[in-house]
Image (cartoon, rainbow, N blue to C red; front, side):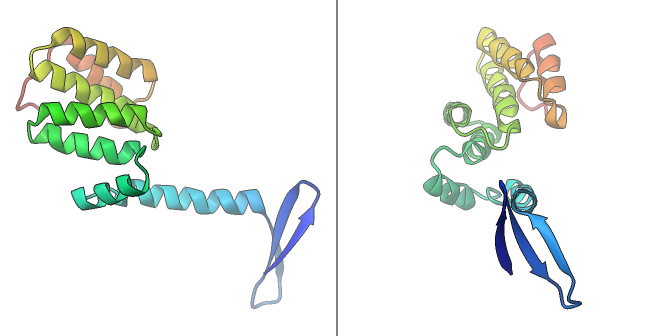
Length: 154
């Protein structure tokens, strides 16, 4: 592998076994590796509580780790801890981006579950403001704006 500087773009020359030389812009190569890495990390880095804790130890601002922990607390009906973790997710790095909208949706569900409808409505409205409908988040926020979330419903 040979690195050469051509103007503002660094190029890496890769020589294949067929003696062909291929020039790949450094930005393109970097973006490709980052895209593959991000797709992998979003699904696997925080699949278990232990992985989430490890991720938090390495990056205390990890919205993904805080979100996953908060989601687990919510599913276990530990609403106070869930709300704390989801609030931390919103104050974190917001990576991946969908953690923002889904943190608001689940916070809304928590507030509905404990009888704080005004706060729930605020969270659902904040979810809608993100404009992010990843996995139907805005649809879910709209649904619970119309009718409060009840424990035991998905």
